[in-house]
Length: 99
Image (cartoon, rainbow, N blue to C red; front, side, top):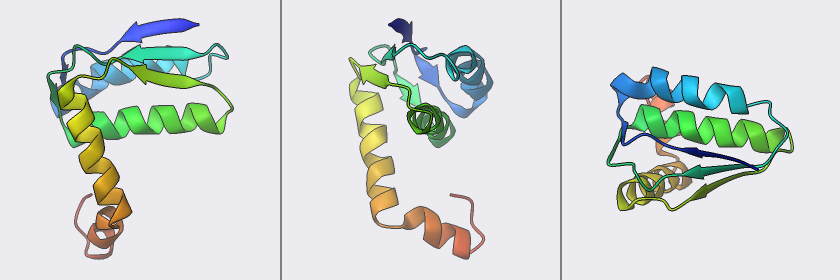
């Protein structure tokens, strides 16, 4: 099992760093454990990238687990899940607004 720890700041200005951190693990067959206990700040772009990474690994049959999620990370994930369940991203797309 591979392990990695997310950086404290996952704001939009750090998304490239997050992408570079995650990229080597995208096609790795080994299960991946991502520790989120250090996350103090996260923007939608960081959360979207993290979600897409986990989704793409799952789609390829690879296991990814986020552990020790900080309160900041948990709150951001809840907001994203609520927005998706309410169709907010789809409604924004229909109106031409960025999600």
